[in-house]
Image (tube, rainbow, N blue to C red; front, side, top):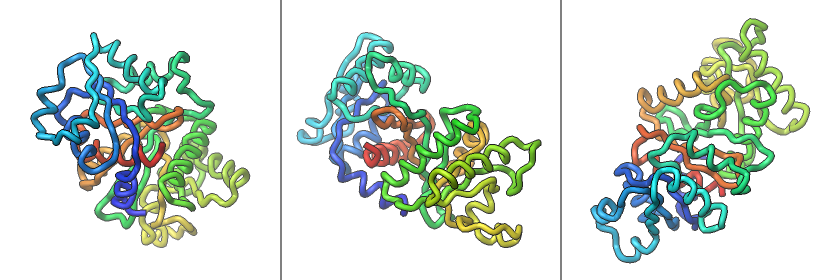
Length: 296
């Protein structure tokens, strides 16, 4: 699937998005674009006045009617009211604005909201890379710091579920290490082998390989040169990274050096959470909105 197809499909889904700490030009710019190009409605939560910033975008009366502004007392009140809106069924998903990820997720995970599930929450980055022929997803680059084998299995399950939800019926998954053979001194290679063994047994129809290096996963020529027998090489849909450091470096390398578009979402709760970096462009924030709509 192409990235643009996912964005186009997301534009046709109606939902209400609760935005936590929305008073930021980049966030509002993404919301305005979503108002103009999707069927989404927005609830904007912030302790700071937002009316003037929103009016500066010259929205029509009909477009303004799809935005509800909720003025809160302070940051703590902003977060609680935003999450409560989802818990009450007034909104279908949450979008992170100018607030730390930890503060938002700490609120989401409180028992009183009943938004937790039995699944591990994990972050998925969805890339449109100019030099790659289709959409590429990577997990986990922003939430699970140093996942063990069991946690990597859960992260992989989340990624496979999300890819199928987006429309990729038979996703190809690579579990990344620096090498293709198991080396006991390189824990990522040991973990990758265990993760693949689990899915080979529990979900034999899933195309998953590992350990596999990044070059062999995304480039068929590299695997041929390295004499690697791989069915997913050069055509992978999703990558599982060893830990947050390597994932974060890959994320930022693709964005800043490869001019990749990106969408970022956390799944595993009862609702998707749009989790963009504060440095992400308004364009990428818009992409994240569209991708999250596909995951409701």
